[in-house]
Length: 114
Length: 119
Image (cartoon, rainbow over all chains, first blue to last red; front, side, top):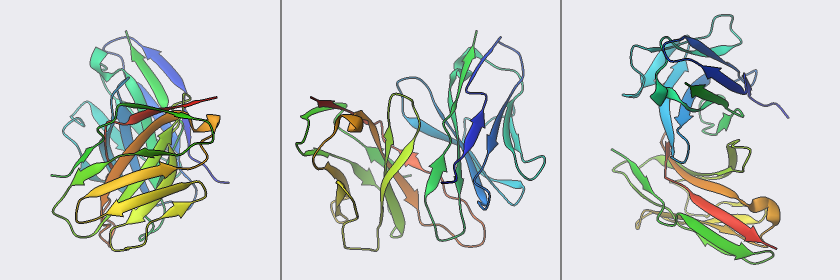
């Protein structure tokens, strides 16, 4: 069964460093999302992406964040200068064609900023 | 703005018994979808079941079923014949109806209910 994959599974970085989180969507999916979950809290929407551009973004998704699909396969989330409060689990989710509303989540990347 | 409320932070059930997890939501939309996701200790988010708001019939997936009360804005999850592997955090989630033409629609999650299945 096709699945969403994410790398790395765990990333430790120092405050102020740049990190790139990678996601490989299910192959025929068109809609892509990033969510994050701070430990013990609910899952929060960050950004959605369709047709090579951002469709919607939350207040959390400020200028420190960016997304792209550089090679038509990977979908990446970049955090330019990490802060302590960026420590969280980051989930990529992908969705198929219009009319199918299920979003399938990857296993997540646990980001720890020290 | 839409909100999702899960009022039971933790629940416990004996193996083989039935448990119901509660979820209420608030929206002015008429076209929307509701989901239950399971998050086991591995923290993977797994889709359990979905419900279209325009459908009166409650969704069912094997041992999982929902009680969707649109007027009351209630969407509870019933797990029958609970198994040890059902131990997880369960999140209720809301999505506005997808706008055709490429518009995406985010999931809005509740705070979750931690379910423990006891042997």
